[in-house]
Length: 172
Image (cartoon, rainbow, N blue to C red; front, side, top):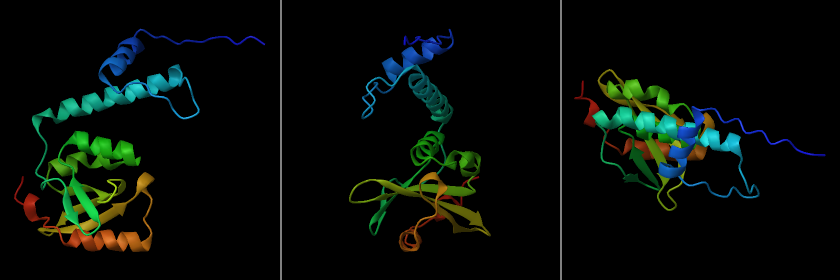
C-alpha cells in the first residue's frame, strides 16, 4: 500500500512556520515520535504567534504586582503582572487564567502562580479579588482548573494569608 504525502502549505502558514523555527523554540524530539509532522508544527507556530501577539500588547507595561518570588512555607508565589505572564500560566497549566487580564489591569484581581520551592514545579494558580476595599482569596486551581486535594488547598490558603495583598489597592 502506498501512502500519499499531503502537505497543506497555505501561503499564510509558511511565514509563521519559518518565524517559529528561527525565533521560537527549536523542534525537539517528542519521546517516541521521531517526526512530529506538519499539523504539530502548525499548532506550535500558531501558539507561538499568539504568544508574540500577547507579548506585544503587554509592552506598554502591566499592572501593579508585588515582587516575584514571595516564599511562604513550602510554596513560592510568583505574581503575574503582565498579559504575557497570564498567557504563559494559562498555557502551562491549561486553564483560562488569561480571561482575567482586564480585571487585573483594572486592579480588581491579583493572580499568582504557586510553585514548590524545592522543585519549582507549578502546582496551582491563586486568585484574590478586591471586595469591600480588602483582598479576599477567591480561587485556588490546579492544572486544567482541577480542585486540589484538601490538604494542599489548605496549605496554600494558609501560606497565602501570610502575604500582604494590599499593594494594589491604590491603583486605578
